Length: 128
Image 1 (cartoon, one colour):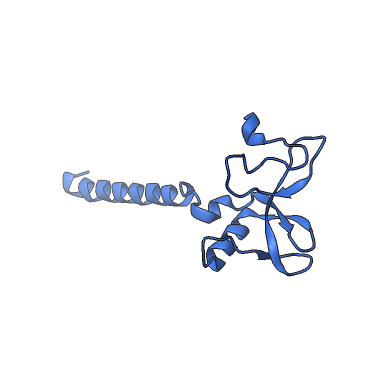
Image 2 (cartoon, rainbow, N blue to C red):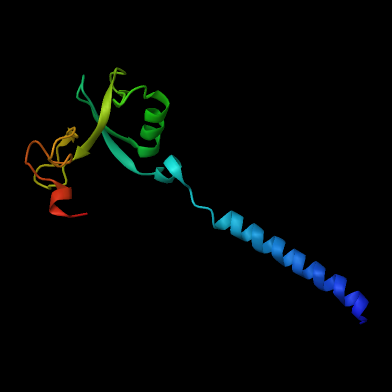
């Protein structure tokens, strides 16, 4: 084949290869970011009014806070049971002999995940 015919074919092969490589990179290499990266992580909620305890998706909770927060205070979500806006993020004690669900402590020098019933803190113990 002549050089004048080889050159356009080689350029075409290179262009097609680059398009395919770009398509593979952009379709498989993308990771979710922001709130959506937390989708699928359940968190505990506890209602201050009716004391209901249930799990929701962390991404849904953070989206609610983002859309409804008007001050530095975290807004209460509508409770799944009583529908009053008094549901807040909670923890389930990882101590197998306790396992109670409680709301996080605010501020102070103590660990916010310290169980008020058995006094266990997963963060303090370093257990993950």
